[in-house]
Amino acid sequence: MESKERETEMGLTRGAGSKEGGNGWEPKITAFVCNWCTYAGADLAGTSRLKHSPQIRVIKLPCTGRIDPLFILKAFERGSDGVLVSGCHPGDCHYTSGNYHARRRFATFRKLLEFLGIDLRRVQFSWVSAAEGAKWAKMVNEVTRQVREMGPFEGYRKISDG
Ligand code: FES
Image (cartoon, rainbow, N blue to C red; front, side):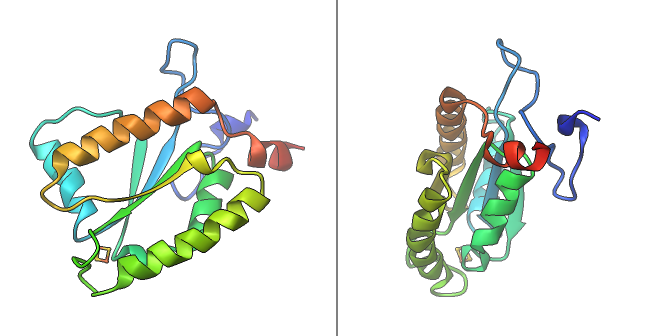
């Protein structure tokens, strides 16, 4: 069976991205977003009919403080070419300081990603509020463009297919 045909419980397909681009490949981006700000911002983008890349898969968390580095590694393992983590702006976290914890954890986690050979440009961290639908749409397009330029993430695919 082609590895790209294997679906995972996260709804991702292993291996290369979809066949929608001009060269037959489009990136898959997994976005871990907090329920209170970025998810609402993404929803606003939708209700405002703002167009953005369809290559993004949104996974809602109660707060970015819930993000675990393993979530990010799993996303890559299950076929993502890029990961976006986004939550409330500093000072606006629904749980007071979850986003600060996430930012601190993320800074440490970047070193682990580097150690594993994952290009840090594939993992983005941002703040998007519930009122920033346009910012969400712009960011999704920008992240998709960057990951598209880098090409498919092959690291885990080589290991799991090897
Ligand atoms: Fe949004 Fe904590 S509730 S980052």
